[in-house]
Image 1 (cartoon, one colour):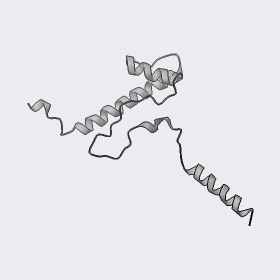
Image 2 (cartoon, helix red, strand yellow; image 1 turned 45 degrees about the vertical axis):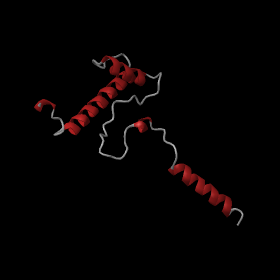
Image 3 (cartoon, one colour; image 1 turned 180 degrees about the vertical axis):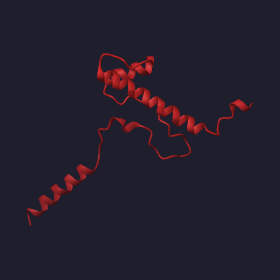
Image 4 (cartoon, helix red, strand yellow; image 1 turned 60 degrees about the vertical axis):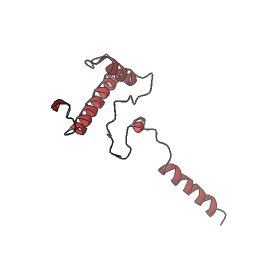
Length: 106
């Protein structure tokens, strides 16, 4: 009986740790809240760790625009990620505005 209890406790701990808690996903901060009638369009957010080529490429694209043709593959991937997020955001905003934007009718 003594061995059953520690093994059971250990198994439960593994189950809780394996199923839960924290997430190391850097994209976790994206707007995934339930729709309360508000837009769920997430503006571009740099998901990369500061000091990396990916981070630098994302920041460069956000501040400068232009082509992603640096000398570093990671820089270029970060740059492309910014433009992908920007494109997704623009499409989302445009789809939210369909039928709701009457500014041109005034």
